[in-house]
Length: 317
Ligand SMILES: Cc1cc2nc3c(=O)[nH]c(=O)nc-3n(C[C@H](O)[C@H](O)[C@H](O)COP(=O)(O)O)c2cc1C
Image (cartoon, rainbow, N blue to C red):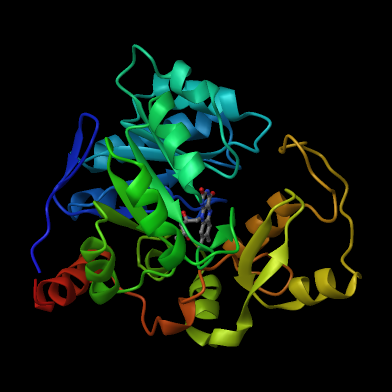
């Protein structure tokens, strides 16, 4: 089927595919630039890295692509406002915000070239984002990886948000793995999709090979909802850490950095995400979307796009 380019505020992507931001350090400039070079919108995961590093990644991404340069910043971060300021200063085109709802971010970007996309999981939040000045909303269902704002499927929520939000693009996210899935949401009225899990298994994703291998070795039932100290559920691949969280034996680490506005201190999520990204996939937290088990190979981003477009174009209008 045919598709239209995706216009978000002043930014236009030829292909309506956003690569969801992935913390900590999973989606950095190399991945984001590769996605933007392929015609989509690549997003640097800016949570869990300091303001200077965020600025350096944005500038590096700008050097690597003439396409759209974006960051994802989680609202639950203590340093949310500082990272937003740094991203504006470094000239990010788009800031995607999720994991909580920020009202102040829309004011912060006023008068700058940076624009805001809000990640929402309900029609109410979608409408509020539209009213406050978001240039697009990403509707994320429970199939997504990382922190979850809902226990409802994207198939249920998407039509509700689509019907409510009238003036800005509405994107679908959560469990989208191939061009057939993309076609399904475009037919449901989506202006585009956001995908993260598929891009973990790309050459350009900075996660350790063991992290990518964990995705490819996983089975459907290994990908579970788990407790995050952030106070929201998360979706990840079951491993030693998840078993310890479930049976209450997880070790509480000392908090050195106080990175979250509110943290149950059940364990240090920053350290556990870093461990996994670096390759300790048993003690680390391996965030993953519900459909990671469908991935069979690690490919360059350009090849992933080629496959996605081939599948999408093979679907009758
Ligand atoms: C490893 C990983 C890390 C993630 N980190 C973030 C994050 O820092 N901020 C955020 O808003 N979403 C985060 N997400 C969610 C994605 O951006 C995306 O919206 C979601 O995973 C889409 O579903 P899919 O992975 O099934 O495609 C993360 C997802 C994964 C798999």
